[in-house]
Length: 296
Ligand code: GLU
Image 1 (spheres, helix red, strand yellow):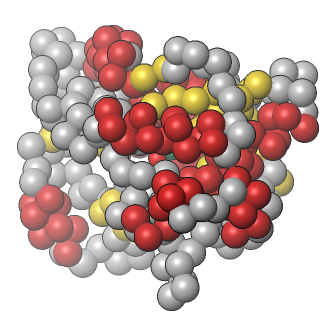
Image 2 (cartoon, helix red, strand yellow):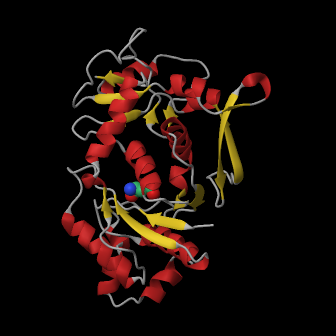
């Protein structure tokens, strides 16, 4: 069976130890399985991405001994594809425009809703303030340059497989582990998704797409069979599985790995320049030293 892995950094800062762990884990899995390793530059947020960071990331990856076919896929070259998909979903009545500010959402979500968790993998669970009265939408022109939300309930009502009690459910295979040790066949129900994820943003204003939409389309476009990434994205995978079902795309095998943390136990962020690979390189570290530091 083909085995295609990818590493998908956003060039918003230097490659640090956490990224190196992710990239090397995916690379090792690809090599071990006689597969392929692809690089994808996730640069949809043009206000934060810089070509200098991209160049530095590529240089650091090569220094670590990782190789990938060129040219790389850059998400900023795929905006038309994302737009086309959004228009298709609009025509299917799966999207609605949202004009809420962060503040609006916070205020509305603070109204007590018993049993409802506040936060999901896409931030505060949207209280559906902008959800339009039905029947809605597809007859109206596609809203250009607006925030568009996914009507998650409409998706979960129609997608997924019915199980006992006719509750619809979704699944994916996990070969690493989620933050609570979840591994193997991960199953989750429509009800759980509606309650703990809700109507996520599928297109951000001024961006014309979102991380979730782009990552799902691009993993399929690049033929990725195995996604290796940090545990912080484990819950987001549930969103991705639903989007794959909605768009008729295959679901890869997922491998979520533990996160590299700093001395205080906080996970490394882009701004952790102290852990940047380029800094270790400048201090004379070898790729083997980096492997050793991240426990590989
Ligand atoms: N661009 C994302 C990041 O840098 C990658 C997410 C993923 O691997 O799906 O965190």
